[in-house]
Image (cartoon, rainbow, N blue to C red; front, side):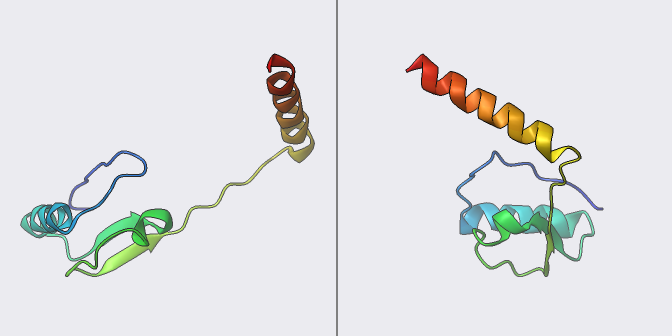
Length: 80
């Protein structure tokens, strides 16, 4: 890894913004840009290769998660 660039969730990427990222990446010696699959579809096409990191979630206790989600939904309904 040659460097990092952090953007807020749902960032509106622009061609100029990506050009700045690419410029800093090249200056740091990077030969590619790494991003999440979610952001890859929203990026303008970079001139450096784009490596897409796919992230998956795994739930250890599905029954407990379901119970907590249902309880939270019920509390929300009751608050209306």
